[in-house]
Length: 203
Image (cartoon, rainbow, N blue to C red; front, side, top):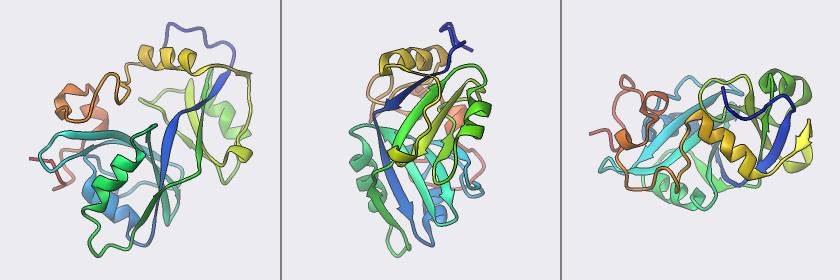
C-alpha cells in the first residue's frame, strides 16, 4: 500500500476538528447536505464526502462516522470545524439537529493489519474509522482521549502524513482548498454519489 515500512505499528494523535451531530434528524439532515450517500450508514461505519457550497464549490472534505443511532461525528482538518458547522447551519431550518465542535480526539494507527489489530484493542465508546480508501493497514480511532488504545510505537504526525501522501489521499488546505471544484479533488469516486438525489451544490 505504501513505500513506508509498516512492519511496526505506529500511532499518533491527529490534529482534527470533530463535530458532534445529534438529534432525531441528524442522519437524514446530513444525507440531504452532503455529496455522498450516508442514508444507510450503520453504527461504527465510515463515509467520506465533499461538503459543497450551493454554487458547487468545495467547502470541505469530511469524514462521517456513526457512533450510535442518534449521534454521528464529522471530522475535518484542524481549523475547518467551525466553517463546516456554519455552512451546515444555514440549512437546518426545522430539522431536529444539534451540532457542536466536540471534545473527541482522533488517534491514527498505521501498520500491518492495523484494522484487525485495533478491532481487538478498541472498545466502546470509541469507534474505528477508515482514513481513506479501504486499507487494512490504516485505521483511525475516534473518541475520548482517555479511552484511546495505545498499540505499537508513538510516532509523529509528519511520518503518518507521508503515509497519507503515499495512499493518494488529499489534505484540506494543502492539496485541495475551499473554493475548488469537486473534479479537482481527485477523490470524487470515493466522496460523491451520483444516484442519491439532490443536495446543495449538485448542479
